[in-house]
Image 1 (cartoon, helix red, strand yellow):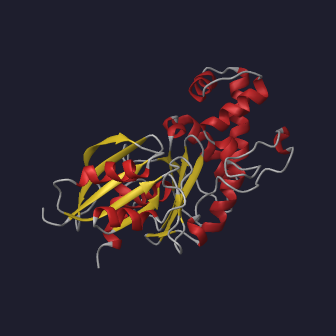
Image 2 (cartoon, rainbow, N blue to C red; image 1 turned 60 degrees about the horizontal axis):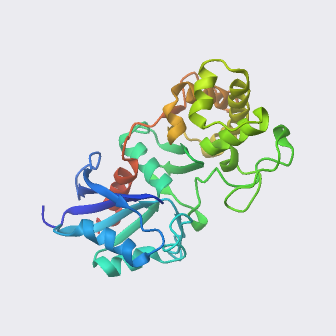
Length: 304
């Protein structure tokens, strides 16, 4: 194997997943190496976990998908769920510790890279990948190239004061980013639960809400309809602006095909380019899009 292997990580607040990809090959299949708990409060332990997966490997470099945003100019990462890494020039510190070049990308960016190359976005010039999981995220590929934009925030459609106070009869839900009116606060699984609490006066997990919706329960049906109304307008406007021809959907809510189909039909009604075929489709690069996307990014970065 020589030094043609890339060590890939998918780092979340709870677990670190690792895998190997051969440099120069197509990276649709990444060899899993296992996972480990994320030492969120101890940076030395965090580095030790990463280095542990490198032992015995002859590597070209390290590629990381992480639940945070890296400023492309300064290299500083903002990653709220891993406090020990937050605010660091993380790629440089990992490179110094491991003696290897390191590339770090946002997990949603890795998701859309994987889908554009190997998943639902194959054959499409512009791909907007969206995450409907705990919250709302996204990434954009145009002409085969990842678009990161100023500050590295391109594709982050979950944040920004989209919902005016009182819109849809809702209170001003606060978002974890510090703003109010963000889609992230109402569009993911936790957001759907907030909508149910507001409309139904009771707490329900999103899985139960969706099960009740499939069964035709009144409040759950109202919640899902409201959820769809809130998300579809901003998403249709985004697609009018960026011109993406396919939208792979990942995250926990994407496991409910009927929900994605409902959102797709509503989004297409708001697009200027009317089309009969679905534009929102379930992601195909499961279960490890983070590792696959990190490997795709490494192909370009370490080619020189």
